[in-house]
View 1 (tube, rainbow, N blue to C red):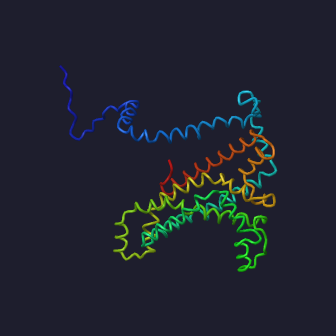
View 2: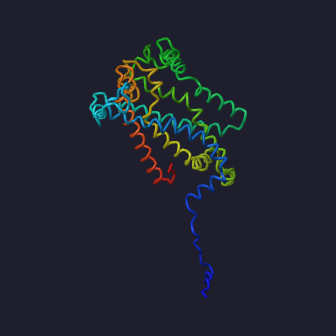
View 3: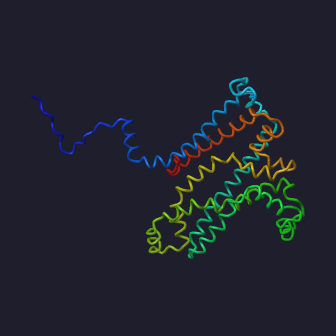
Length: 322
């Protein structure tokens, strides 16, 4: 009669792995409350994010609303070719890249700086006041913000008269001057979103181990050295993740604000891909297929940017989305 041999001392026994189906059922039984909380989010993304992606098929058709997707004629890459041969394409790419890159350079670091400054305030009351004041512009409607901007930069606006008095700038409506559009857009974007974007960094700052600051003070580090050698290194993972997400939205420039601010006089500097899609697809000539094709191209470019940015950051510092 055979007997089972006992494992040698120190030998690791490989237990049979539980099948995937059983593991999923077991995890669901243990964490069903968390899955229940996640259910509304899942439904939202399925209904409003993933389901509409089926409509991308009309970018390969001459879509007619009366015929529907199934009855419209298939034309393949026709609309993509027309877009790539469009004489306005170089201008659109240049303007989109300029505004997106300027926003990334100036608006993205501003939220980090504000979070660091708020974190250094000794008075908790003052910190809350500053946070509240900086959050308020984010909740103001884009239409209202653009109305305020139009009043401030008009011929008799406060900003125009201030720049005229200090720098001698000619008294003119700044929104009619192409060279002023990008600075106006960037400054207004910082004002609107700096407080809201700083929330993530403030949350990350509260998670930093205070013993690191105590050790730095013991070593003789002043406030500046603590920020450089403790605070910022601890914020790097959060900064990298937010940077990748920001890069993914580079070509998805906020067309709502641009449409409310630009005029035919400033198309040379203000017209971006999204505004051009709106005009070509809905305002000037209803062409759903063409606008969908351009939007599809824009989404592919954003995905490529996210993918390569994620790879670069993972190789440089090990921080990435996946």
